[in-house]
Image (cartoon, rainbow, N blue to C red; front, side, top):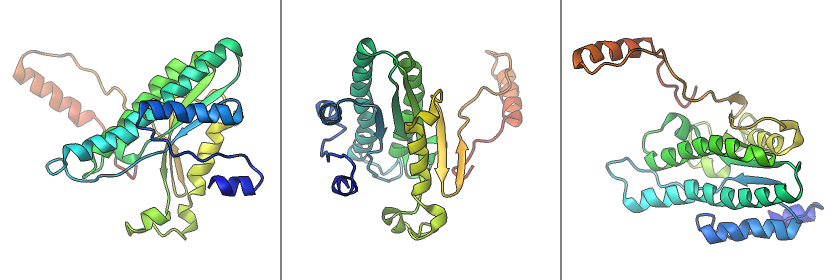
Length: 239
């Protein structure tokens, strides 16, 4: 990919750093700064899958997914944030962009993906925290939940034909490009769902109808049953 970018007249450098390693994530950020003179945009998209039900999942399968997705996103974000903090002291006013990748599995849950769903939910929550902390440095932080038909998803069957133009990877890529650009000024702490030709902004968890608490179990049962009856059901992966 880096060679293709250079052949097209752009500037690019390939990296084989392991983002789940704290030190290597730091060296990755350092490579970008050294090569291009600065770091303006960080897109976290590294990931692996180790799908299995909770009852059958091994510790290693849990750890590997959490390590790559959740720790890997945090590690690169940490080193980038440290760079942006230092840059702000020297050159205040320069904007930065942190763009993380979540998933409908993390936002809504998916059977057989407890490790992946937990990691992706954590990334979405961490992005909101990052938006609060990085605003002082002129940096926005947002999440993209992408879906597209690619060579990788073709093996899964269903409506994932990589030749289907309605499921083009270009749609989520354009959202990332928009978030990385000046067009997204002022947008931070949001999660964008983009799959095929469907595009939306996630609205996240919210407080439901409030009620008075009780230590009496019978009274509490009646109250909670009433709250559940009034509450909307959890959203599913398809909205």
